[in-house]
Image 1: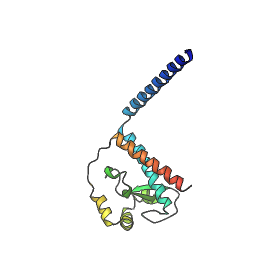
Image 2: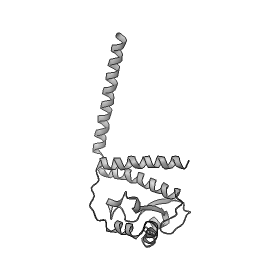
Image 3: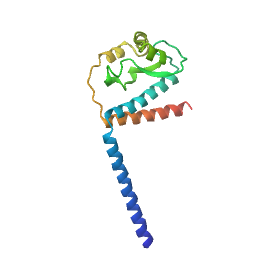
Image 4: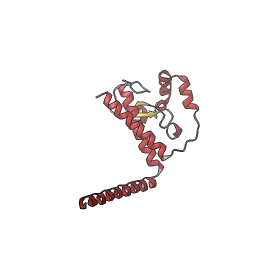
Amino acid sequence: MEHAMEYAADKRSKAKDKEQKKEWADRKKSVKPIKHWIDMTQRAVNDLRRKQCLAEGDGCISCGTKIAQEWHAGHYRTTAAASQLRFTHDNIWLQCASCNVHKSGNIERYRVNLIAKIGEDRVVTLECNQENKKWEINELEEIRSVTRKLIRELEDKYQ
């Protein structure tokens, strides 16, 4: 009987500790700015798109090179110009650092090759999208968790 009482007290204590840790995590989460969550999600989506494009054997969407020291996830419409498209897969393709950084995305060649890859209708849809989007933390967390799952599946497939 004595052992059962100690066990029950220990179990209540552990449950209380777990609840306090969850409350602390929720408080920490609530004070982080939305930019933090957007950056974390963008990092995950960019990683996924780079890995997908490399797995498919794609090269730079702008210049076509298949050898680069560093690969970027280049956005057709920049995140500054169209933040509502920042996580849209049609808007993110593999780019070499030279095109993405030094040639400002090499956008003319990017558009030509993007039309060849996904079709003019989808490119026009990207170009015409002017919606205002205000990201919510729970929405960003959902995108990030789905993206991380896809990354794990892709890594498992190619290992």
